[in-house]
Length: 232
Image 1 (tube, one colour):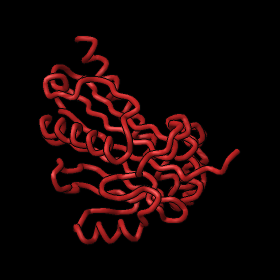
Image 2 (tube, one colour):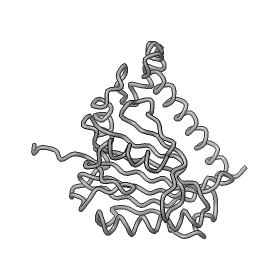
Image 3 (cartoon, helix red, strand yellow):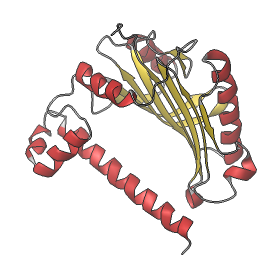
Protein backbone atom coordinates (compact mmCIF):
# COMPACT_ATOMS: atom_id res chain seq x y z
CA UNK A 1 0.00 0.00 0.00
CA UNK A 2 1.51 3.35 -1.03
CA UNK A 3 1.70 6.30 1.32
CA UNK A 4 -0.77 8.22 -0.81
CA UNK A 5 -3.32 5.41 -0.61
CA UNK A 6 -2.81 5.21 3.13
CA UNK A 7 -3.24 8.96 3.47
CA UNK A 8 -6.34 8.90 1.27
CA UNK A 9 -7.94 6.21 3.44
CA UNK A 10 -7.01 8.08 6.59
CA UNK A 11 -8.48 11.29 5.18
CA UNK A 12 -11.70 9.51 4.28
CA UNK A 13 -11.88 7.95 7.75
CA UNK A 14 -11.35 11.26 9.50
CA UNK A 15 -13.93 12.87 7.23
CA UNK A 16 -16.46 10.16 8.05
CA UNK A 17 -15.89 10.61 11.77
CA UNK A 18 -16.27 14.38 11.44
CA UNK A 19 -19.50 14.03 9.46
CA UNK A 20 -20.86 11.52 11.95
CA UNK A 21 -19.98 13.77 14.87
CA UNK A 22 -21.58 16.77 13.17
CA UNK A 23 -24.71 14.75 12.46
CA UNK A 24 -25.04 13.71 16.11
CA UNK A 25 -24.53 17.28 17.27
CA UNK A 26 -27.11 18.44 14.74
CA UNK A 27 -29.63 15.85 15.92
CA UNK A 28 -28.98 16.92 19.49
CA UNK A 29 -30.06 20.43 18.57
CA UNK A 30 -33.53 19.28 17.58
CA UNK A 31 -36.23 19.39 20.28
CA UNK A 32 -36.42 15.58 20.52
CA UNK A 33 -32.66 15.17 20.50
CA UNK A 34 -31.64 17.71 23.15
CA UNK A 35 -31.39 15.05 25.91
CA UNK A 36 -28.40 13.70 23.97
CA UNK A 37 -26.45 16.79 25.01
CA UNK A 38 -26.37 15.41 28.54
CA UNK A 39 -24.05 12.66 27.33
CA UNK A 40 -20.48 13.68 28.33
CA UNK A 41 -18.83 12.78 25.01
CA UNK A 42 -21.37 14.57 22.83
CA UNK A 43 -21.40 17.61 25.07
CA UNK A 44 -17.59 17.79 24.86
CA UNK A 45 -17.68 17.43 21.05
CA UNK A 46 -20.18 20.26 20.75
CA UNK A 47 -18.25 22.59 23.03
CA UNK A 48 -14.93 21.87 21.28
CA UNK A 49 -16.60 22.65 17.96
CA UNK A 50 -17.61 26.06 19.29
CA UNK A 51 -21.22 25.00 19.06
CA UNK A 52 -23.87 26.92 21.05
CA UNK A 53 -24.94 23.83 23.02
CA UNK A 54 -28.62 23.67 23.79
CA UNK A 55 -29.81 26.25 21.24
CA UNK A 56 -30.28 26.58 17.52
CA UNK A 57 -31.06 30.27 17.46
CA UNK A 58 -29.83 31.92 14.22
CA UNK A 59 -28.04 34.68 16.14
CA UNK A 60 -26.04 32.22 18.24
CA UNK A 61 -25.20 30.06 15.24
CA UNK A 62 -24.10 33.14 13.30
CA UNK A 63 -21.82 34.14 16.18
CA UNK A 64 -20.04 30.80 15.92
CA UNK A 65 -19.57 31.26 12.15
CA UNK A 66 -18.13 34.76 12.43
CA UNK A 67 -15.77 33.74 15.23
CA UNK A 68 -14.41 30.85 13.17
CA UNK A 69 -13.97 33.14 10.17
CA UNK A 70 -11.77 35.69 11.95
CA UNK A 71 -8.59 33.75 11.20
CA UNK A 72 -9.30 33.76 7.45
CA UNK A 73 -10.13 37.40 6.79
CA UNK A 74 -7.80 39.89 5.15
CA UNK A 75 -7.25 43.61 5.63
CA UNK A 76 -8.83 45.18 2.53
CA UNK A 77 -12.49 45.27 1.53
CA UNK A 78 -13.82 43.25 -1.40
CA UNK A 79 -15.32 45.09 -4.36
CA UNK A 80 -18.48 43.00 -4.05
CA UNK A 81 -19.79 39.89 -2.27
CA UNK A 82 -21.01 37.40 -4.92
CA UNK A 83 -22.10 33.83 -4.25
CA UNK A 84 -23.91 31.67 -6.79
CA UNK A 85 -25.67 34.64 -8.36
CA UNK A 86 -26.67 36.08 -4.98
CA UNK A 87 -25.09 38.93 -3.03
CA UNK A 88 -24.02 37.99 0.48
CA UNK A 89 -25.26 40.42 3.10
CA UNK A 90 -27.94 41.80 0.76
CA UNK A 91 -29.91 38.78 -0.50
CA UNK A 92 -32.67 37.81 1.93
CA UNK A 93 -34.10 34.42 2.77
CA UNK A 94 -37.33 35.30 0.99
CA UNK A 95 -35.30 35.88 -2.18
CA UNK A 96 -33.61 32.48 -1.85
CA UNK A 97 -36.90 30.74 -1.10
CA UNK A 98 -38.45 32.31 -4.19
CA UNK A 99 -35.47 31.18 -6.28
CA UNK A 100 -35.70 27.62 -4.95
CA UNK A 101 -39.42 27.50 -5.69
CA UNK A 102 -38.96 28.98 -9.15
CA UNK A 103 -36.27 26.42 -9.99
CA UNK A 104 -38.26 23.60 -8.35
CA UNK A 105 -35.33 22.61 -6.18
CA UNK A 106 -35.18 19.90 -3.56
CA UNK A 107 -34.47 22.09 -0.51
CA UNK A 108 -35.23 21.77 3.18
CA UNK A 109 -34.27 23.38 6.44
CA UNK A 110 -31.18 21.90 8.07
CA UNK A 111 -30.68 20.88 11.70
CA UNK A 112 -30.36 24.59 12.41
CA UNK A 113 -33.34 26.71 11.43
CA UNK A 114 -31.16 29.36 9.76
CA UNK A 115 -29.64 26.84 7.33
CA UNK A 116 -31.21 25.72 4.05
CA UNK A 117 -29.89 22.58 2.34
CA UNK A 118 -30.50 21.64 -1.31
CA UNK A 119 -29.46 18.75 -3.55
CA UNK A 120 -28.93 18.30 -7.30
CA UNK A 121 -29.05 21.97 -8.23
CA UNK A 122 -28.65 22.72 -11.93
CA UNK A 123 -26.67 25.90 -12.65
CA UNK A 124 -26.49 27.39 -16.17
CA UNK A 125 -23.04 27.12 -17.71
CA UNK A 126 -21.57 25.11 -14.82
CA UNK A 127 -21.58 21.50 -13.57
CA UNK A 128 -24.54 20.48 -11.42
CA UNK A 129 -24.27 21.11 -7.68
CA UNK A 130 -24.58 17.86 -5.75
CA UNK A 131 -25.05 19.52 -2.37
CA UNK A 132 -25.74 23.12 -1.47
CA UNK A 133 -25.86 24.73 1.98
CA UNK A 134 -27.04 28.29 2.54
CA UNK A 135 -26.88 30.03 5.91
CA UNK A 136 -28.73 33.15 7.06
CA UNK A 137 -28.14 35.46 10.02
CA UNK A 138 -30.63 36.73 12.59
CA UNK A 139 -31.85 39.34 10.10
CA UNK A 140 -32.40 36.63 7.46
CA UNK A 141 -29.56 37.93 5.30
CA UNK A 142 -27.66 35.34 3.28
CA UNK A 143 -24.20 35.18 4.86
CA UNK A 144 -22.69 31.85 3.75
CA UNK A 145 -22.87 29.52 0.75
CA UNK A 146 -21.12 26.13 0.70
CA UNK A 147 -21.42 23.70 -2.20
CA UNK A 148 -19.95 20.58 -3.82
CA UNK A 149 -19.84 19.65 -7.49
CA UNK A 150 -18.88 16.11 -8.62
CA UNK A 151 -19.23 16.02 -12.39
CA UNK A 152 -16.45 14.92 -14.78
CA UNK A 153 -12.88 16.14 -14.07
CA UNK A 154 -12.67 18.22 -17.25
CA UNK A 155 -15.91 20.03 -16.43
CA UNK A 156 -14.76 20.72 -12.88
CA UNK A 157 -11.39 22.08 -13.97
CA UNK A 158 -13.15 24.34 -16.45
CA UNK A 159 -15.51 25.55 -13.72
CA UNK A 160 -12.56 26.21 -11.41
CA UNK A 161 -10.89 28.42 -14.01
CA UNK A 162 -14.17 30.16 -14.87
CA UNK A 163 -14.86 30.89 -11.22
CA UNK A 164 -11.39 32.32 -10.71
CA UNK A 165 -11.90 34.75 -13.60
CA UNK A 166 -15.33 35.76 -12.27
CA UNK A 167 -14.10 36.41 -8.74
CA UNK A 168 -10.99 38.26 -9.95
CA UNK A 169 -13.26 40.72 -11.75
CA UNK A 170 -16.03 41.02 -9.16
CA UNK A 171 -14.13 40.76 -5.88
CA UNK A 172 -10.46 41.47 -6.47
CA UNK A 173 -7.32 39.40 -7.02
CA UNK A 174 -6.92 36.02 -5.35
CA UNK A 175 -4.94 36.22 -2.13
CA UNK A 176 -3.59 32.65 -2.27
CA UNK A 177 -3.25 29.85 -4.82
CA UNK A 178 -1.95 26.28 -4.61
CA UNK A 179 -1.48 23.70 -7.35
CA UNK A 180 -1.89 23.86 -11.12
CA UNK A 181 -5.47 24.15 -12.45
CA UNK A 182 -5.06 21.73 -15.36
CA UNK A 183 -6.71 18.39 -16.05
CA UNK A 184 -3.30 16.70 -16.30
CA UNK A 185 -2.24 17.90 -12.84
CA UNK A 186 -5.52 17.15 -11.06
CA UNK A 187 -5.86 13.63 -12.47
CA UNK A 188 -2.17 12.70 -12.19
CA UNK A 189 -2.59 11.00 -8.78
CA UNK A 190 -4.94 10.75 -5.78
CA UNK A 191 -4.98 13.68 -3.34
CA UNK A 192 -3.81 16.17 -5.94
CA UNK A 193 -5.30 19.47 -4.82
CA UNK A 194 -5.76 22.88 -6.40
CA UNK A 195 -6.83 25.79 -4.22
CA UNK A 196 -7.69 29.40 -4.90
CA UNK A 197 -8.78 31.71 -2.10
CA UNK A 198 -9.97 35.28 -1.67
CA UNK A 199 -9.45 36.55 1.88
CA UNK A 200 -10.80 40.06 2.35
CA UNK A 201 -11.90 41.93 5.45
CA UNK A 202 -15.59 41.48 4.70
CA UNK A 203 -15.61 38.50 2.34
CA UNK A 204 -13.86 35.14 2.10
CA UNK A 205 -14.25 32.75 -0.83
CA UNK A 206 -12.44 29.49 -1.56
CA UNK A 207 -12.47 27.07 -4.47
CA UNK A 208 -10.87 23.67 -3.92
CA UNK A 209 -10.36 20.93 -6.52
CA UNK A 210 -9.34 17.57 -5.07
CA UNK A 211 -8.75 14.14 -6.54
CA UNK A 212 -10.33 11.46 -4.33
CA UNK A 213 -8.92 8.57 -6.32
CA UNK A 214 -11.55 6.02 -7.33
CA UNK A 215 -14.27 8.31 -5.99
CA UNK A 216 -13.37 10.91 -8.59
CA UNK A 217 -12.63 14.62 -8.53
CA UNK A 218 -14.66 17.03 -6.40
CA UNK A 219 -14.96 20.80 -6.49
CA UNK A 220 -15.94 22.65 -3.35
CA UNK A 221 -16.88 26.33 -3.40
CA UNK A 222 -17.38 28.35 -0.22
CA UNK A 223 -18.44 31.97 0.13
CA UNK A 224 -18.62 33.88 3.42
CA UNK A 225 -19.57 37.41 4.33
CA UNK A 226 -18.80 39.48 7.42
CA UNK A 227 -20.73 42.59 8.38
CA UNK A 228 -18.71 45.75 8.82
CA UNK A 229 -17.27 45.98 12.32
CA UNK A 230 -17.35 49.23 14.28
CA UNK A 231 -13.96 50.91 14.80
CA UNK A 232 -12.10 49.71 17.90
